[in-house]
Length: 306
Length: 238
Image (cartoon, rainbow over all chains, first blue to last red; front, side, top):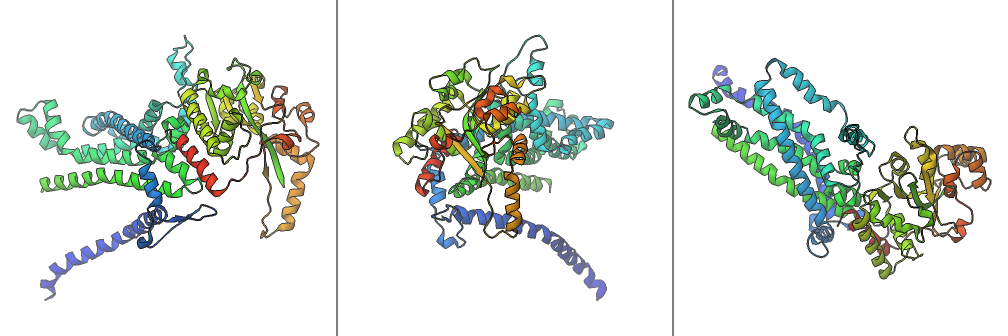
């Protein structure tokens, strides 16, 4: 009997073990993602202390008030649309920065994964090197480099001319390039991991069937790493959406304000914490769309693979 | 207990700004001068910055609840964004001497500190500070506070006593740049003892400023909300 029963029990035991191992992760998610998210909801749909204008969270969804969230939504468009420009700016900056990141990161990751040969370890180490220095320190370094008398202007002047470009005076392009610089390593590594797993045999089959290098790249490599590209873009897009200190350090001008700056501003102002929660909800909803696309493209890739 | 006193004025680098800002009929105008677009900063504090907008427009009630005055503030902030696109920050003590911008709304304590953040080889002579000589500007103070439920009230009082000692207060001023409220500390002593270069002597806060200057006060709940909404629109870059 024991010999017959064991093949059925082992998978069940194994499944139980994996379920148990996933428990800490699930508990972590519940404690540090779902619970805080509920707190944000309770504040957004809560009320304000009439005297101190501190948020009074309402825990029962049946008692929620939509006033603060409505204020945010009704001030995005139209004559009273004070938040519209910052939200649009966020979208444009993040899209342009992500496009630049992928343009820089993909060739680098492709080279390391497919062509670097024995130099791969060294290049990977160099790619990881920026992670050894904190993001804020790297941005502070740029504040010095981009100063009027900084190295960037000196380099542009080639030692012959006096270049007086005020890079840190509220220029959108500087904020975008700062993000590209800061987030590009986060894109290279997942792209490398995905490209490294591409089966060589498939690429060889494409070449055997008459595809040239470009055609094999467009028809085989790109479709096979679509989910990798989406994951890499997501990994950089999502933190970029909420990032406010790149902007604070490289511009600090209201003309480059993004949604992260709105959150930072309102969360510190009396009576406006609910607005901050409203902006968080907007970012969450916008983030969910590419997340859903990623889940869909991964499951489709898995279906094709099986 | 008052801990430090300060004024809000305009700081600038004379080697970068050719205009003698102090000699202008309305010195606040310089922060709106398109000639200094990208070269200007204002204080990232809603009441201080919006109060300055009122003073520029000749309105001295910097705690106003008048809708017309609030409209003036909004228009001033819109103009400010359009004309000079200022940096909104509280790091003037570092960024003005560092050259990130050449003129800014500034707390007097920060211009005193700025002399220590100048690039190597740049003399403190390039720094300037303007505050109305008749004292009719924003003047304020920070406090030392003992909690009524504090565990060590006697020690706390000893600490206050220590900080109020003139020598200690002066030494503390040397570190923070923010002037202590002792009567023995005045323009002459501070310049003479080289705590403040003569070219920024106008950063010294005089006792009479508190008689004629304007103070930022707590606003009513509704008024506070109205001020914050204007500030939020400005900070959002609308």
